[in-house]
Amino acid sequence: GAVVSQHPSRVICKSGTSVKIECRSLDFQATTMFWYRQFPKQSLMLMATSNEGSKATYEQGVEKDKFLINHASLTLSTLTVTSAHPEDSSFYICSATGRDTQYFGPGTRLTVL
Amino acid sequence: QKEVEQDPGPLSVPEGAIVSLNCTYSNSAFQYFMWYRQYSRKGPELLMYTYSSGNKEDGRFTAQVDKSSKYISLFIRDSQPSDSATYLCAMSVTPAAGNKLTFGGGTRVLVKP
Image (cartoon, rainbow over all chains, first blue to last red; front, side, top):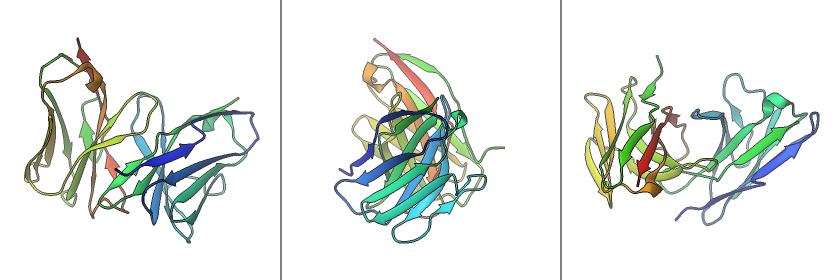
């Protein structure tokens, strides 16, 4: 089946630092990857769409200078949370386009102290 | 009004019972429908993907789509405690691969031994 990994699974950082999260499609190539954010007991909120070799498309209200997305290859997209603050603490999930639909990574829990 | 409505639950059933989940939607342009299962602190796992009205069966899972009523359902037969999770419906206007998904809020299911 289609496998998507994320690294790290959990990260704790100090306020003001930057954190990079990797999303990889392990057994297929994904021209499009998506980044979501999920708060406790809430559904997924789409942050941005990442296309290989081009700039990401951000959803309304998402700061593109704060959430930097790079999709350098067909199997890797990265999300960098710059100058993180406690309100950025959340569960970040990526998905990658497979043969027919989207497959999700296991998520990364970010805690900003 | 949200584009996709889903009862948050929790839905509690005894082991072996049928679990019945549903979502309603307002955008008649949605043509592709998915059900995902999400365990606590994990990424969503694709269960079913359909794009036509009617039923689709896969093991203990049956997905139903009624486009005329803008209503989709997921049935889980012979439920097990391991089915305890949050179930998310998702839908898209164009094929889900590479395109934006709109999620319901998720229904939390508890299967009691």
